Length: 150
Image (cartoon, rainbow, N blue to C red; front, side, top):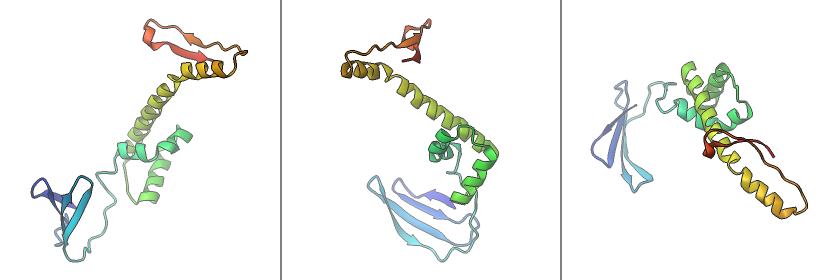
């Protein structure tokens, strides 16, 4: 499919194989796209290569899977995406998706570790008799103290 833009609101898509199929529509508001006209039946075979199925899409789509299996094999990932979505992405895209997912999970881990002090304060508030010690690794940068254990 090839997208062409008539103006800011109107869009037209037509088959890349020039079979005569097209779809024409326009935006109504920010989240509603209304199809106005559709051409004759589309008889061309479906392509398994999609531009929107890229590394970032795969990382977001399979983030929970990466959380469970951080070293999910690229070959298995390619098979899973092909079976689940009927879309083929390259080995390189799968490799980059794994890197993006690890970055996303790493950022969320940093955010979670930033909550350790408030978690410790809550434990002290609930259990006045308990002893709570927060061990950290001091670094040269005071804002980046590393958590060791609670």
